[in-house]
Image (cartoon, rainbow, N blue to C red):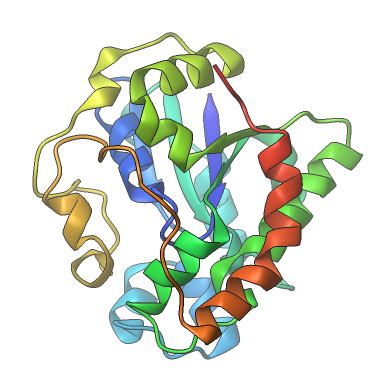
Length: 239
């Protein structure tokens, strides 16, 4: 099985990669289109130069890796994807060949968390429109993509991960509930900038409280994202 997990930034995506990476039957890959995205957009992200030299910059070369032999000869392959990386010029036909799961988080939480790490983010930077587009494209092809909300996972990790595994036809493995402190060997080179909190963790964080207070700019960003988040939220997996 090849799982493509689609999310925007600050969506519990790294913790989910660690959960699948803790299983003995999974190889994982971290944001494989990041270098291609930076090369094509010219965006000046933190650690831009290091990212570009660490990965293929040609999208077709990335796709060959995603559909080719699974690293370590493992039976399953978990692919952590950022939806904002799927810009025009990055092919999407290959997506129909993998098991697609959409990881969502309330836009207010994303706007607050991402803007703390990246100055003046736009709607395109946080991936909601691209996530919605990919979801609808799969539905138009007759697929029924699975949606999971990060708040539900944090509220009850075992129940939600069990439900996810059952839904996609994967045996449950309790190893998914914990991982070693300090990160994963397959972390992207950008991990020192973005993964500090999850590197200190050994499992999923506790349930979140009320939505955060936002600045005017953050509130505007969250409001713009809501129409793309809400349809997926209504289709999310529940237990």
